[in-house]
Length: 613
Ligand code: F6R
Image (tube, rainbow, N blue to C red; front, top):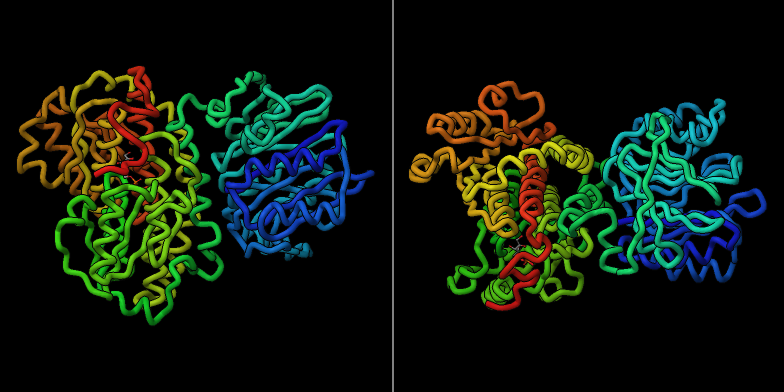
């Protein structure tokens, strides 16, 4: 959860940037840095650890300048140390960059650049960006063009801010996909840029939000917007109410919509610091696990409620398939009274966004009292479920405000995958080749999620078509069966439309009696090992006069013959497909509730943290 702040104007930029970074510090805090243009040359201060370390460094060795950029980092590639902290400077010392996101093809780019003689100073993917900008500048482009050319070479989702002593009157910013936002704040004779509005709100209430594939050239008196091909774009300046809650919502109508869109970033952060793509390894330090302990684990019981329980159902499949550890999912409110059979070789693993859900905590206590090992996968830092566990995998999604959980659903899907790979590696149940394959499949996930988010207008169209239904049936099989449950839960809790999730193979044993024109069927049919089975379920539903809305993989040729109502999703390795298929269903529920004019963020009768039984 990295944060970016930049300033250009007549004031000293350093305190403005440091103050802005402070407001974003909760997003990333393993290192921080600032670069300013001081008398024509770039000066940088960076330090590992919290922002206070950087502040102390700047106090000891001050730096001043009227244009500057800064960053707080949560490591994705490379250890959280000074060398890997942003900003990253090129070989000539004339270009500097801060970046949110992952350069997915950085290894190839790095190899190419090294072959051309570039010397890398860090292990980060970001450093490739600054070297590319430098290279294109050297071949005759101006700064704006060099950034544009760089964007056409790097894959993935990005927020990028670049500054150069060769063109000291400007900052160039760009956004591709959803690796966090880029917002430009307008002042008088000064302008600001940040990843998030709160960083600049104390200076201005006038803001321009970059959309995906847009760039901005920011000088102290002017802002120009263009798409990443260079075509100028007219923009609207938004007036931000001086309301911290509205400010947090940024460009979105509801927190739920914002949080759905934050998933590229939250999933990037979920991988950060835990996945070593070069070595094909996952490390979850927070579990405090060693080989001996890992080998002793004979059984895992995942316990959770609601949405978190659905994440656990996917987790079961992953832990069994990848780590070959027998795993069960127990609804916490049942488990706590089930007098379960547990021992010290069993892990009770609680999944909880809030970490304060009464039933989940009671289930953990049951595990503790019967001598099981206790782990948790929790979002709220410092919560009870985090504190009482022997080991914890913290979700890296930041505060989730919308009552309907979205980003705190997809993060544990990845967390369970990481856990499965980690346990398989420690206990030696996986070959190095398989481990490499599973780890490398993770790299593309944030940008595949971004592609799903880019298709929001298609989802909105289907939401308009189906918003007045009274019932819907969600069907899935295998690893996407829990996503049918989750899609139905999302719809019912915020739109108050009756929706049921069902294992598709069970349809013929009862629910098929319900199917008619007024009971649309949402069928999860991505290209996974259950695809053929899902096609026949869709055919069965259609034969009963049902209207089918399918989640299908790009390029599928069978499903368009069966239905026109399709949420297309990009092709994804099947064990990770639930992360991708969840996105259109979250958006579908959101848009239906929003079109119905309902209180999306605070639906009736629900609470964000259910601390009662
Ligand atoms: C649904 C939802 C709930 C929670 C459940 C558990 O969108 O948010 O079903 O998932 O109440 O909450 P946590 O994860 O805080 O334990």
